[in-house]
Amino acid sequence: MGDPHSATFASEPLPPVGIGDRVRTWWVIIRTALAERMAYRGDFALGTLMRFLPIITQIFLWGAIFDAVQTADQGGADSSLRIGGYNFPEMVAYFLLTMVARAFSSMPGLATGIANQVRQGEIKKYLIQPIDLVGFLLLTRIAHKLAYYTVAIGPFALVFFLCRGYFTDGLPPAHVLIAFVGSLVMGFLIGFFLEAAIGMISFWTLEINSLLLIFMLFSFFLSGHMFPLTLLPDSIGWLVNLLPLKYLAFFPAAIFLRKIPDEELAGELILEAAWLAFFIIACRWMYARGVRRYSGYGG
Amino acid sequence: MPIIEVRELTKSYRVYRKREGLRASMRGLFRREYTEVEAVRGINLRVEAGEFVAFLGPNGAGKTTTLKLLSGVINPSGGTATVMGFVPWERRNEYRRRFALVMGQKNQLWWDLPAQESYRLHQQIYGIPEDHFRRTLDELTDLLEVTPLLGQPVRELSLGERMKMELIAALLHSPEVLFLDEPTIGLDVIAQHTIQRFLRQYQERRQTTILLTSHYMKDVAALCQRVVIVAGGLVQYDGSLAGIVDQFSGKKIVTLQFAAGNRPEDLARLGTILETQWPRVKIGIARAEVPRVLATTLRDYAIEDVSVEDPPLEDVIADLFHQVS
Image 1: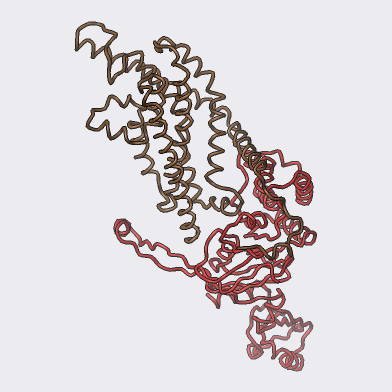
Image 2 (image 1 turned 180 degrees about the horizontal axis):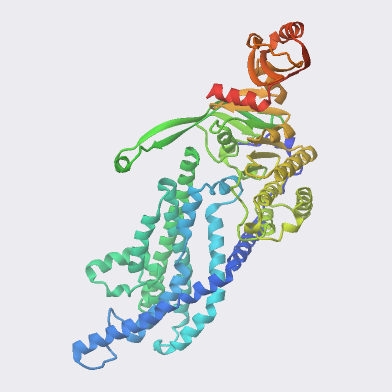
């Protein structure tokens, strides 16, 4: 509807908001969220470093598995042994790379954060202020990731340097590297919109912890975080391959290790982009419906 | 042309009724019973620009629901409302940049950061020009005496200081309409007083239209020329504070101080005895009867002192709330 009466009341009207202002707003949100992250430096740094511990157990575990399989098969060492299409150095490289992928796609606290805001009514803020909740959360999440990478880049570099021997093929060619980076960025966005959409369910049920737990469990196995998805038997492998969870860990690592043939690479990335579009729409749609329900209901 | 116009506004909620006990909880998994709660049942209200209006009413009267409707947080079940020509629940950005809502302790400030960081963010979100921002912030922090606290993380501030910071956050974009829900709840007397004084000065200076809900009659008496009493989801009274007593209290309180040794036993015939502390007696007397009763009393008894007062406003309002509920 129009605004025929505004002139009567406006004493000192605020100027209209242009695209330049909008970009500046995004930047200020990111800066503020960065400052907030830094408020608990100690906890933050410790949490970042602890992430590297599991990789050591993975190396030992898979070392033992490869040894055991080899001994059982031939009673001797054979570096050509492959499990799920991966030899031992590739397997270690795979886990190092999924660690990088998870650093992009994991969204700790996003869904529960949304649920808490809905339950405690803080969501009101986004209804009253001229600001979009999803955009705001995305910007703060980008800030969290930037803060994380700043702290983690040193340890990451060290671990990759120490483990450089496992990357037997060296760096992949440029087009693969570009695809890898693209898959990481899309992995971040899929992770964000997927988990934000789960958070939006709280508009209907308020309590989403059990649901989230189930999702995490599935995500843990079916994203390739635990093992390369090629290890799965064909009977369920094809189904898992259709799911979008692989983009959270398996897919970027597989690209880097050249497990995805060049001729399929573009198609796979387009498919990933389509999933991303799906989750953006799903998340937006749920938010719009959720707010309507919330505002129709009270709270 | 009123700045706020509300017609026959209604809002009902569907509330899940849970019975006591585990068995009922199990049953609730499959079949739920809901009841309709009518929080607002047909509110009519016109507020002119620059008015400072108080919403009074018992808990659950529909005050907060009305403020939520007017700020677009919730959609109504029926009726219409416009604020500055906008329909609040359409939540247009043009509207959202021109009003503010402060709800008790629900904070819009970042807990772990100094308030000034949140203010900078507000500046961007609302598109406040730098000079406007500086001027307003200086004015507000000065009036509320919180300038030294701007750099301190919000979590380290006291409740009263936090409330002041919340107010500043809400006023930075110079809203033309301000909704305040219990701005002094839980604060000590000094902080209450500061916030009252601030609101009065601010409103006088800016002529902002303010709707305030509060349980503290002192807030209302200090600030608002106009009082709207809401109870049972309806407007029960709309007028001046003093008018409440005229309209709803049919009686006066007469205090008689008897001369020494004078202790009459038949005082109940004068009215309702409210308090007896010989030689002083407080009696509630119907307004119209006061002249006649006083004349009789002065004629029949030896009286040293007499005073006639209106009953305390709190009592009148409490009675009124009681009657409605």
